[in-house]
Image (cartoon, rainbow, N blue to C red; front, side, top):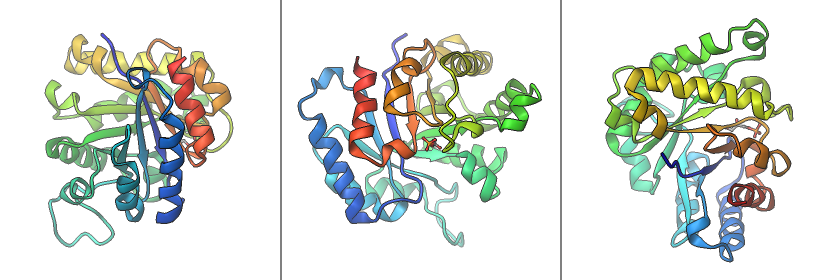
Length: 256
Ligand code: 13P
């Protein structure tokens, strides 16, 4: 089963529209000398307000644009939210769902992650669904219990066909923005567990075909080792996606 590597940048709450366009231009121009059929899939996920200019800057290049969140309702009184139709209209192909920062600071639960992800795939967006344990959960030996629950609840009610529009991102909370990256072995172990869980839920063919990204302090210096692991199919990158040079270095590590 061949799974195309996906290198995705989560800009979080960074960059104005002009800064975002400059970053996309930097990425696309650095990739022009790369052989197109060797390139991984490349995605940037700016804040909502930067999406339109990022889409404009990415036009005609290999760079795709996604959002960082989406609501499950098609419209209505949901202050501060955006619908799938709005994201598609703006030119998004992907949307991040259930990032740990949304779970931690904005009351996101497994149930709302499930609703957002289902609305995304039903609308034809690729849902990049984030899971991952806290340091306390890891240290108490609860990693697989927590990640297993997050995966089962996020995809409850999904069909195997729905899963063809899903990417899972394993982001250990203790590795996000801390500079403390999971070792290649720690990450591979949880990725294999997620794949096994998906196999139990949807059959092994589906488990083998879903891409699972690693996220948490992925940098140019550690990307190659992580991306070499059997069950790691790319990265969801925060800090290092904010500088074209660093992000492109990770894309190139995926091509080596
Ligand atoms: P950092 O790469 O800054 O650790 O962030 C990872 C992340 O949360 C991506 O979604």
